[in-house]
Length: 202
Image (tube, rainbow, N blue to C red):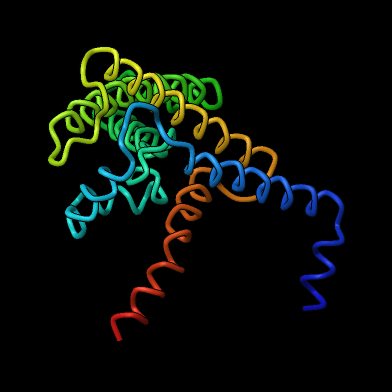
């Protein structure tokens, strides 16, 4: 305890810890900001029917944002997926392999390509989610159509890009890897409800 108290007294470290806490608080607030155009009560019913499926796992990694269909519904998974794709490309594609050998300059280019890949994946996943919600039973979309699809794609893409920026800020100005902290915060947020459900089951 004394060692932990001494660490917190270090001004720079205390500043970094407080920055991470504040950033994660912003993330958790955003999880509860819903995307317009969806009946929240009907959406809760749809996800209740999907428990134990792959959608439940996606919802877990998004910290419950997918079930609430919030502005952070996609979470940072498009960025993680894009990062994995380009890591694999550095092994099989000579151009990316050469970029990796260029040092910081090459890594910056790969990071730029990763962001473009994130944007593309957000468009694809946002469109897929919008189309899927338009065909749920019970219906959850208040006004189906092109306008809902475009607005959903824009909202979810903006939310993921904002989370990506938050993660980068935490990595630079906080402690640890920002993306990992966001994923951990999302999973950890489900621990209290999971513990309560286990007690109720017993």
